[in-house]
Every structure is written in C-alpha cells, then in structure tokens.
Image 1 (cartoon, rainbow, N blue to C red):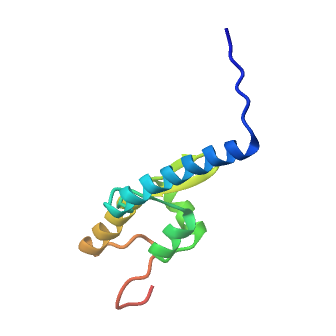
Image 2: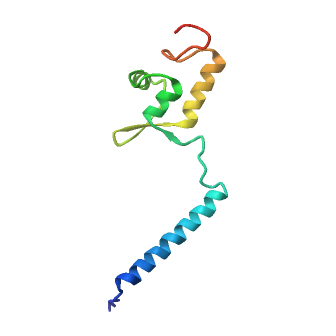
Image 3: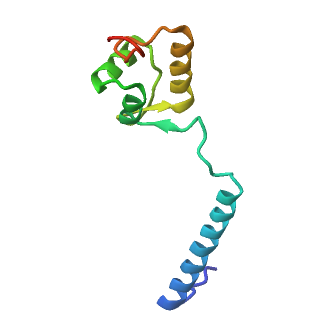
Length: 109
C-alpha cells in the first residue's frame, strides 16, 4: 500500500536547503583537499587551443582534418585533451619542427 505524505512548502524549502548545504560542504572539503583541482587531462575548447597554439580556427580545423591534432566530438563541439595538446607543443619545441602555420621563435613565419 502506498502512503501519501503531506509536507508544507516551508518544510520542502528546509529539506532542499539542508541537502544543498551538505553537498556544498562536501564539495568544499574535497576541493580544499585537492581532489577537484584541474588536471592536465582537462578538455579545451577550439578557442583555447587556438590561443595556446597561436593559430586561427581555420588552421586548427585543417590540422584536425590532416590528423595532426586529435579531437573529441561531443555533439557538434570539438574538444581537445589538454595533455595531448601540451604533448604536441612540447614535441614540436624539442624537435624544432613546428606545426605548419605556428609562429617560429626567432624568425619570420
């Protein structure tokens, strides 16, 4: 048999406020303990990658089509693994082989 419980608006507000406060407190404790800090595997947007690599959106899309930069598709959005992008940047710096279209340090281009 089902039971019907009658609760006033004030009681509902109190229950919801208590649950939200508890969730915020739990999050605050985890955040302060370092569990919620950003990592190198965060996802970057197209604009963030363009700014990081100092390239245009058109150039970025060209790199994606050529397979030079891996992406993740979520719906219609392109998202990029920060660790993969940083790895590409570091590899290009160490090899002195820049991605085509990026600014070369100390020279023209």
